[in-house]
Length: 278
Image (cartoon, rainbow, N blue to C red; front, side):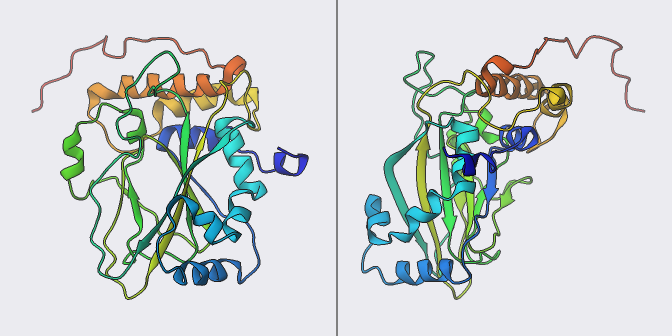
């Protein structure tokens, strides 16, 4: 990461937002016609190039190496993160039906030896680039904020329709949606007369954090801990709130390394009995 890219690092609140919600949006600055040219190039592809989409459309490399994207990824994965070989171009044409809710992690077993995934780490992120404005009827990506923290969510989630607190990614052309690899998401139906493209890359952490890799201010620790305990994402049943807060704080500490927050267990249920409803 160069000195010019350090100016694009996330701050404490942005990292907390990612931990709480499981996503972050970046919009790198390019010339007026850059994204429309990428769209035209994708439209001209005779077939889906799969993992070779960046070879078929070389301008994509400029997007994923833009300082604002590098700064965000360095903040979440460390400055030595790597780009995985897997890439994919999603072409959502008019009439495309909604996907089932899914996690792209493919239910990789959770292991504590560093060879699998664990629910309190940021090991991998998906980065989805949209070369055109995405309106509500064009098949935007839907996601459930905070669902990355609950990797044991039952497979029956996949058969559900709309969730009350889902987010629909209606974004401007050139926006990139950075997702935690465990988040539940789906492409929605395209009922418009326009083709919606999305190009997905996967980035991975190389080493565990020793210090924060973002623009960290330790004077904000108390306020950040308060946010991790109180900010809402998707609504949860009451019994899961303590687990959620614990996983949020542990994820922050795994990212922050030496700048970890002091999380103390508190019995939040002790005290006066609930009063009967009259």
